Image (cartoon, rainbow, N blue to C red):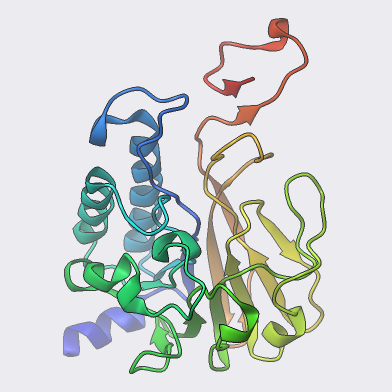
Length: 278
């Protein structure tokens, strides 16, 4: 216990944030089978880079849902790959919420036993955040109070997390924008988040953005890389400083570095630069 307390005092008041990894053995624009799948390897590299940054600081690592892509089941190769990377960083405090892809397409309330994380917690040393769990979905890590709630398919099924410094969710937020500029009119009311947390982190929407939020901050971290032609702009992951329990510093964005999906007008616009074109 003495060692743990000493390490906690040395931890930076910040956390690494990743969301919507969607690890998968993709067929489009990919080479190699199984764990040699080129796009899966890139996703695993991003996962490793974010965990290594958390280990180096040291600080907590937070994941806002959708670790895998196939809803309702996980390919053996994907499960092996993400588990190996996560288990390799056992000394990193990991806090996660499940996303819709981690649990499958369900209409009823989702519990942790129905998600990819149910077994992972035993081998990767992570804590799942959700009000249904024995710890009430609220945990202190790195001197920061976190709470969270996993994805629910209907607004009425969602139990909001307890008040905390940082709230972690995987839902749509009303007022967020898609990559094409469309403003989403349905989802969580931003006021519900602002009333509970100084910073709210909400996975699910792949387009990274910060929502206008007087009196607090709402960060949609987005996916760390383009997953299809609906994505646009630079994607990556984040390092979030917390100067005090109720004051946030400037957010650090770390580009994922994976190829982008780009749509062009003519074949002559296609470049040999490693990006994916149509």
